[in-house]
Image 1: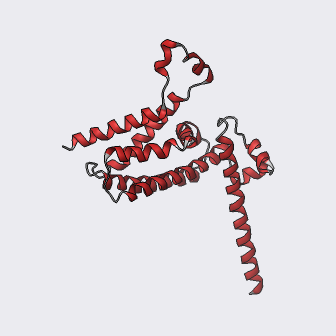
Image 2: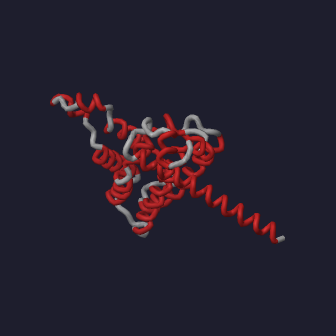
Length: 223
C-alpha cells in the first residue's frame, strides 16, 4: 500500500513536470514569434532557447504546426476571456460603438494573435493529427458559443446565432486586413511611391470601421 502511494505521488510529480516543460516550450516559442516571422521560428531555435534537445520538443509536439496551433489555442482562449469579461461588465447594456471598442481594442493590443490568426487556416491547421485538430475546434466552438451569446444579450437586434456569425465574420476581417496591412518588405518600399499610398492599410482603423458598418447594418435590418 505504501509503495503504491509513493508510485502515485511520483507519477503525479512527473506529470506536473511534463506540463511545466510543455508550457515552458510554448512560452518560449510565443516570445520568439513576437519578434520574428513564423518561418524564422524553427523547432531547433525553440529548443536552443529552451535549453533542451531538439528531440525533446518533439516529445511534446509532433510538428511545428502543432506547437503553434497550441499557442493559438492559448492566445485565443485568453482573448475570448477578456472580451467576455468586458461584455459582462456592461451588465448586458451596450451600444454598437461600445461593442466595437471592446472587440477592436482587445485585438489591437494582441498583434501576435492577429498574426497567428492570419496563418491559422493556411498553415497551422495543416500537418497536425486528427485529435489535435478536433481539440482545437471544440475549444473554439465553446468560446464562440459563449461569447456569441453575450453579444446577443448586449445587442438585442442580434438574433439567436448571429453572435457567433458576427465573430466568424470578424475573424475573416482579421485575416484579410492582417495580410493587407503587413505586406512583404519589397511591397512596403513600393508603397512609399506617392501614387500608391492608397494601398497602405491601417489595420486598427479599417477593422474598427468595417465591424461598425457590419453591426449598424444588422441593427438597421431589425427596424
